[in-house]
Length: 218
Image (cartoon, rainbow, N blue to C red; front, side):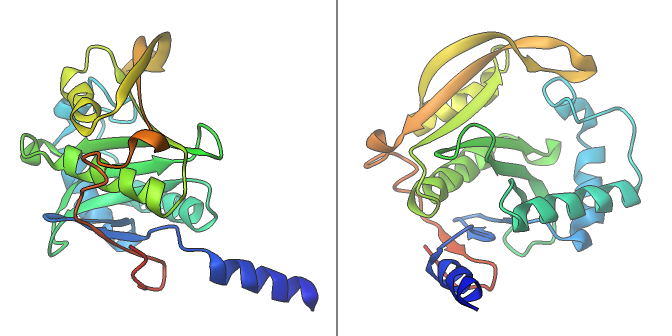
């Protein structure tokens, strides 16, 4: 009985994770299986755009059932606090703009942000807006000590995002990244530390964040 009470107390005290984040122009939220057809459309139309940098973007148009299965896996990992993968939508959530994630694969005190934007929506600053929002969530809700963004050294457009957000380029790691067809590439590591967060562009981001039951937590 006491063990159950202790577990309940811990759940009540916890603020995150953020299941839904609203920015000035976007809704960033946990995927739902009902999003599968919109996700499939966004990826299928963007294969040639995504393929050079995203190893998961193949030339094959995966069936809808495969997208549903992937979303279910993402949701399961999200609910179990293993990984936090989000869909990026327009304000009325009628269209998938892209995808992003707060990946818990570096250390318990760090998050890694990944992102992709569909071909139809590049050039509007959406990846920057999303990354600023997730950086704010990582520090202010998840209590992280650092946030990282990794990208291939040749991916200049992707590298411009952490630079704009005030991240510091810490290192270039030789052959640590993986491109399509399992081609190894050098990877840039960009980091924003907790000490540098106050006054940064992400700290100034105008967002609202909500937990799993829709309660506003930021």
